[in-house]
Length: 535
Image (cartoon, rainbow, N blue to C red; front, side):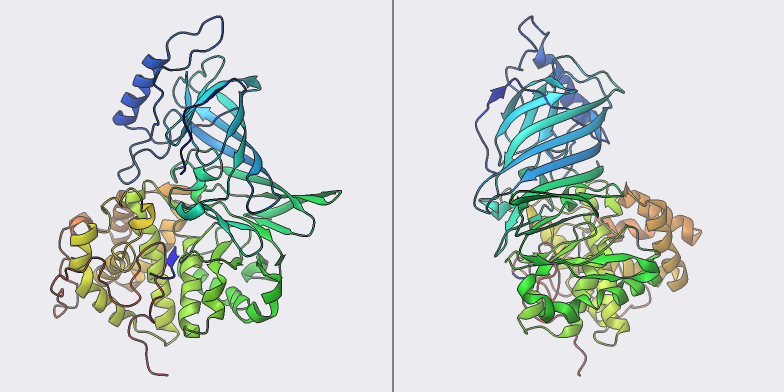
């Protein structure tokens, strides 16, 4: 994610119609205790049907940064999302179908969901009772789901694009797009909203025939009925909920071909197609450059979605990265810098999308890598020195650590500022860790590590511990003693090969950072960044 500048909760409500749920992935002792409490609260079924727990509670999988995100007891394998769109200021009618497998016996099933009204729920075709609590939808199936069983949940609900300041739907000049990172997918559809539970996605969106709809993945059948058209898209690879993308609007969709015949499609405001073409034409070359660094592009297609909207950030939604129109049209930023931001989001397709974080504390693996390739692209194209940028980041690193924690153990954000986890320490601070590692093991071993990382964990999730383990394997020696202080230390270790680099005195202004340092979702574009070379 790159920054560009600078839930509504309903009261508990019950129902009796059913839908099929899905399951989560990694479970801890804390999660097991939470589930045990729910089982005890449910009690036995009666002749009138399953008993609603007297005090249903939102659950979570114990993520250090978002403790109530995700849900224990199941693993989602597929989502089928159907939306019926009329106007951007009206809730969409929706049906979310979830296929899952139980990893524990389930008398109740929790899903993350808010900012919509649930009409009915079915589990394996049978009507199920439900209650909303906090930002969870608690489902009570007509019969318990046994451990290891596959099951299907179908939820009929609304999805409200109004009041999207906390993420989820983004209202554009002529429709909608999505920005679900880090914890906002459940403001759009019921889900297991944590990146550790990746799944296949199918999208079915019905809209007025005058509008164009594009979503992640490959297009499928398109059916026109009267004045409305239903568009279908499917992903060939699993995806985290935070990376889902749907664009609805008066859009042009130019197509081109990338490396190895890769299908490419971009989505831009129809009125701006000619004006934006020079930027769209850069993507195939950027793909070729990234493939030389990280290996073959990991998905079935790619493109950029340029939305006429104000978000304050850019976002790496899988196969279709989201950008603000003004990034390309304001005329306030140099061309090389805009291209480096495009590379930042592209790099995320490998680092963050194909290989997703096991928990949000591993965010530096996403943002540190994307920032690294953003900076490396600018350096190799002769526009901004990587070494100079890393030296400036080194000078600020102790300040960032004091304010936000170390790269691999960042402090939680304020409750009403969830995207506050996207701070300089995980962007340039994370890239600085990679620079130190390259200094320690050498360029050849470092480049081999990068390729092995995305190859070994493709379509999966991985943690900081996994990275340390693989780095040690590639280097042929234990690097935990070197990397742990860089990743978890309160202060920044000495930089290998640069004994003259010194941390600057800690600044007291919160968030102080050099121009261009990342804060918020992706690139802060309040100024042209780091050491621009003359000309």
